[in-house]
Image 1: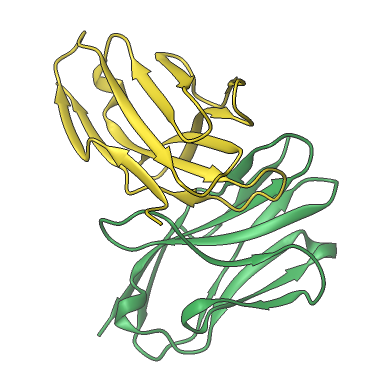
Image 2 (image 1 turned 90 degrees about the vertical axis):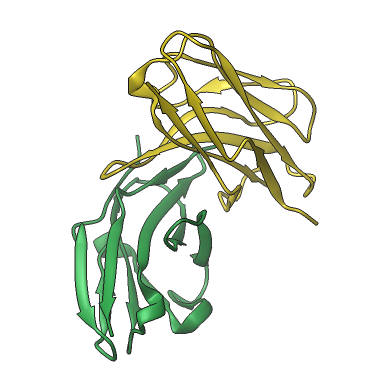
Length: 112
Length: 113
């Protein structure tokens, strides 16, 4: 099992450009999550999907959209990137109702 | 809403020293508690977890944590740290009102050889 995979690993964007971060899990988990990690701020939840077909905002959703394509895949889209979105983005998945999450390797995004 | 506080932001220890990292949470209901570790340049990995039962839980690499319900605490301990324990450590709480895991701000541990 690959666990949680993310693509790309690194990305540099110019302000105003758009991009989609991809995430997939092969553990048959119901719930999936997108976080951003910034120095000194820990992990902040952007969006999550409790189950296939549902998505909800987390703590910092502004400037992002998500799609739960199917049970395996959960993508994060930046429509018009801003320098404030420079961060490391982690995707995670979880069996529903227990809280334990499994994380992907992360995407390091720089917006210039 | 639930919240998690990690009071030590940076800790520097010498090898063989003992470690205790504090974690306090605020949530009135039943909680599941976690410690995650992030080694430099890597993703978060589960170190240990508490769901119920014995409040002293043991995790990987000699780490343990004690859940003290009356103090809303879940402190992480290790009797003797190694250089390879250099990492950032995150405490996290899952309360069953809402399908979300709340993380503390993290503690960056540096172990000097």
